[in-house]
Image (tube, rainbow, N blue to C red; front, side, top):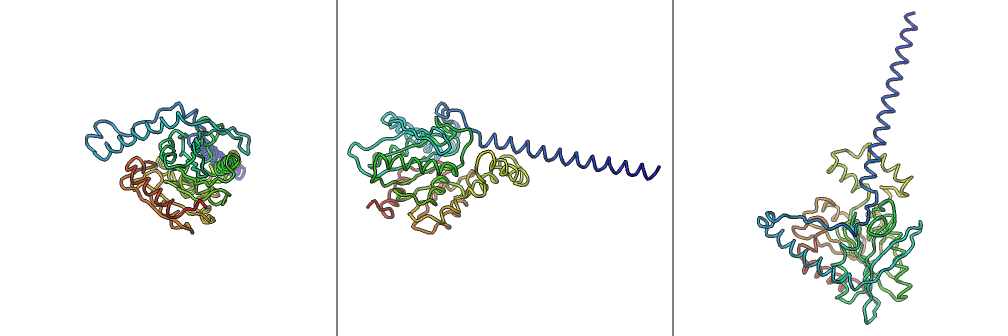
Length: 333
């Protein structure tokens, strides 16, 4: 009888342990799905969302640098809004059947110099309008895409640069159809910067150089950073579970989606830009990708600038660095 009782208790104990393990695994899966939904689900038409102001009137009176930043931003966004009125619509179909949209403008006196300026995470082509306006004034034909799952482009999940690199390849083909002699520079901010670096590893025809601004080293690295900073969680086990789910559902692997790996294969010049005070994509990542790049390169660390606002803090210096790099390192012959 005692032996039977001991056996029954052992079964109950093992059952409780098994149930506890299943509960933990289901909880991890649930948290992972919430993380994926919060981080990677498409944002409904960002074109209808007004950009938020990063500073209050009180902030501006205390911090003159922020006041200058805000005034620069206001003027640049007004310039971009005017530029958009002169642009036309374009669209392509992605390899997985999504309709992707863009705005473009070609010089009246046609030349073969093109810029594709790629926006960042949960933004749209609107964010890139001031950049596009300046490039146009310097004589470039300009294309500003809405990445998949952003703006008016279709898509249920954000590609984080890895899927976007294939979409940018198709936009390059679209340009080549309009201009078979096109010479294209890829320029991108944040996730757009990562897209530039990831695309660079493909060494595509017509592309002559790259400008990446505050892009991250890999999808895994930026998610691990976000998980620690915003959710106060370690990468294990949530991010590992997210990786498995995303690979199956979204079609890409966080570790494989590496700008750091891709740039090592690049054979064209690249300018690296990063904000000195970037607390979203750590400035250390900017140094890391710069050091890993094997070709012609330069690094501009924008003083006082946070994430994705190096241009806003000092537009003259930003564009002086950009066009100096182009003039000295990129050939259009």
